[in-house]
Length: 383
Ligand SMILES: Cc1cc2nc3c(=O)[nH]c(=O)nc-3n(C[C@H](O)[C@H](O)[C@H](O)COP(=O)(O)OP(=O)(O)OC[C@H]3O[C@@H](n4cnc5c(N)ncnc54)[C@H](O)[C@@H]3O)c2cc1C
Image 1 (tube, rainbow, N blue to C red):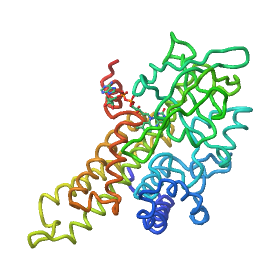
Image 2 (image 1 turned 135 degrees about the vertical axis):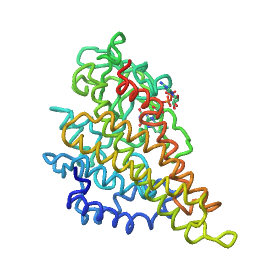
Image 3 (image 1 turned 180 degrees about the vertical axis):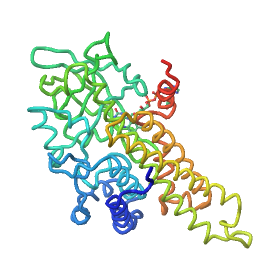
Image 4 (image 1 turned 90 degrees about the horizontal axis):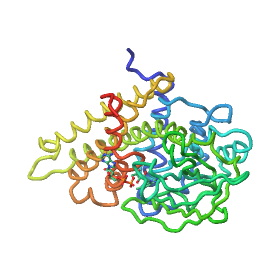
């Protein structure tokens, strides 16, 4: 067993950390109330990202990217998550964001949707959630009914990140009401300017994201824009969610590392009642807990990524990374906020943003209770 990162990954980690420290962290005060500026940063910093040499790190080599493995991605995701300069969802500074589902496209769909996304000419969102189908997407009501060479989609999706800004949506709809999760849900590529499709509302949340509601009123989609075979929808969504869960864990590690840095620096400089906060046991203990959690999460992530890169089933590990990472990073932000007193609540520091974002991560892309339920099924071997 070897616990050392390979030389090239240590170098990658160092370089991304330097980039974040030099180019992103100094911008946090400017971007704090300016989501537009956060979204513009990838373009503004493009030449510096090119110098770093990791543009397209997650795009397969045959499509012109670097095709890095999961362990390298974990390193990049966790390092870049130490900053709040960028949007916390759909992070894309080292390449255009490509939903992994799109890599499964073939023929005309690959030419007209995957390639333009990889090249930054088109953007997409992921539309699965509905009012009565969030944690339990199999309960979705949106239907897609075959009509000649088309499908006709009807229904309402909600909480769809970026729907008001993108070119097309990956929409999941019921094609067989009997089968549902077992082969009755299908994915489609739907252009946002399709007749009958409207962005009807956006939600004002405690986080900066403003996900939207989408109404489909007899939206016609040609059959070639179906993602894979009819009924394959959940298979594709699941493959995406696995790496998404590891990504959540990696994000949590970056957040914890930054919170730990801020908490220890402040505790060593702030004196109350004639002593540094760092000398008080009640301040030392949360910092040591965060330190131990970081160590645990790092090992969990590296192990999950190692299994993923070997082509082994890492669903259990991916669940654990998301549950543990989301919960402990939120706890870390909360404790480091407390150590900072009133300054912890201030927008001059990134802590309040970490606190809000990590709270939301315990609900999105699988609420922690639902992931525990799925994990229990696997490890207890029950239904
Ligand atoms: C900022 C943001 C961005 C989002 N972006 C997208 C997007 O781009 N695309 C998309 O499709 N969706 C998106 N969503 C939707 C998100 O995935 C759902 O909100 C999430 O799946 C939870 O669904 P829900 O809100 O309907 O909660 P519900 O499913 O109603 O669950 C409510 C709560 O009940 C508990 N719970 C649920 N089931 C169980 C169970 N079996 N056992 C124990 N407890 C349980 C959990 O604590 C859960 O938080 C986004 C949401 C937010 C807030």
